[in-house]
Length: 101
Image (tube, rainbow, N blue to C red; front, top):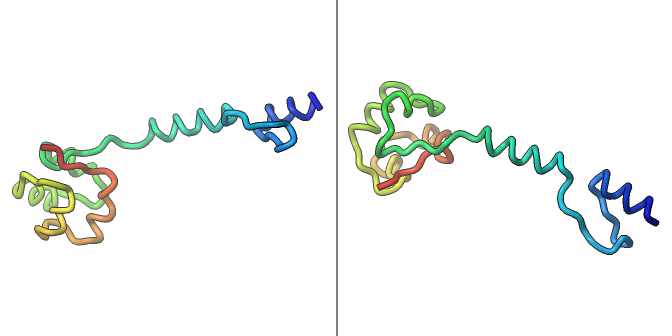
């Protein structure tokens, strides 16, 4: 029985017969941390420079200029309601932007 429990610990699997669950295997913890480290920081559309805005997918000089010209924004969805960006462009960046006051 002990060898089965140890095998479960090594592989990250625990059977119901072993009486419980274990924390995630180390590989899962490390991969979760690595993906969090790779995720880009949110870009604040109220304070970002043109260069920071251009780092967003689909945002080039023209869109960056229009975003900056129409500041401030109460929320990021105003990029749509004010017709600053088309829906397709907004969908590409919506998870990467924020409108801080």
